[in-house]
Length: 395
Image (cartoon, rainbow, N blue to C red; front, side, top):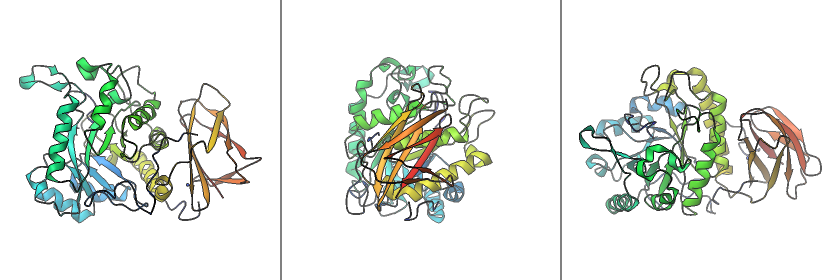
């Protein structure tokens, strides 16, 4: 989750009215989600979608809750009794380290999962500031996972991996740079597996401004994980590497939806900022970004039953007018409606045609945009701005 190896830690739009990739795993039938296997895990209803914030002070939990955050991931030097009390008071759940305090709270509904550190796949700091050693080998991470599970099998364990998930040449992996074959083994070292990459803010020319690396990482991690294993990913919002590089609110929306469309089943916002000065809760001090993140989260919560439903394989084909601008799509069917979510994977505008398989619909509502599009012979056209997102509901 940390941005560099030297970092310090790291809508009622539908409401029953209206949600050609098929990367999302099918949700279980019967009104529950993939979390129902854990007695004290995250909520199991299909109206639940985990939207977390990374390593934040519980004193701000109510403000994050108001922004649509329903989960904390990580607690600085915690959990402590005071941290858990503050989260409980704010109605906020947490995935945290399994320390002695946490083990005293095995019946506490505030704790819904356990952390297994952060980015073991990256080069690890050597003692006494003597540089960097190799990553922690997957077998060691699996053994750590098994110890956590032995102490409490009633909660899932979350493992967050680094940007090597999306980018084979990431030098932060040290001697294991260029070895993506490590990742299927890392995926077995957790119940929930996540990763982070922050292209809008990136210091690496190969990654900078190429938001589609987020989609690539989710897609690869989805392939490496078990079919029924939750895959989450992190979303950037702040100035992580330089004062002049930050995702725009529109780019954050694109990263979120390319994540969901490619199979992410949970989001973790990374809201720390290092430039022009360190700010742990930079999102809360950025009105424009906070408003966009709140709107995004509200829309996701409204669409949660749709997102938690099975993906329709080959439900739609999206063809861009500009072949250099790939578009990704996901089709869902829920409560008698067909939903097609589409995101542009490039920072260039294009028109596009969306063709539905076997559809008899005549109109499509564009959710959140107060407009519709006409469907003729099972297809419709629309335009996509750079990194554009459109969410269609057809009845």
